[in-house]
Amino acid sequence: MEQGGLGDLFGDPEELQRRLAEFAEQLHGQQRLAWADNAIKLAVDMTVAAVNRVNVQGNPDAQAEQIRSVIARIFPEAVALVREAREGLQ
Image (cartoon, rainbow, N blue to C red; front, top):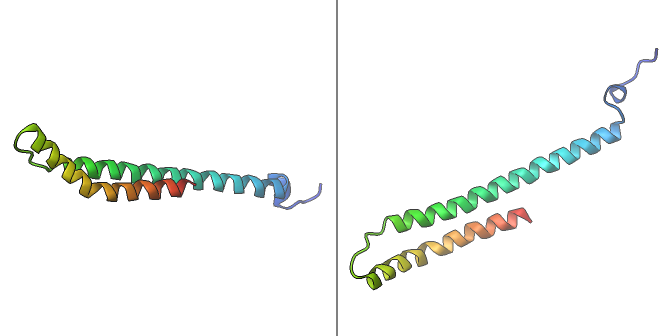
């Protein structure tokens, strides 16, 4: 009986290396997707929290203007988060 190296135990070393590389790429892709999901969720949560903090008063038009004003302030930050998330997926 011949004594072989690890290649005998795990099969072809090149095949093992290829499969490990594929596995690492899958994990990396999952991490990018999780980061993107978290960034998008943060953008939504920031927007909702900002709108919820508004003490709207006045008639419906005044209330709508107050909400628009808050969204105009928070929107650029939310868009930046979503943009970074999308770029991370590409």
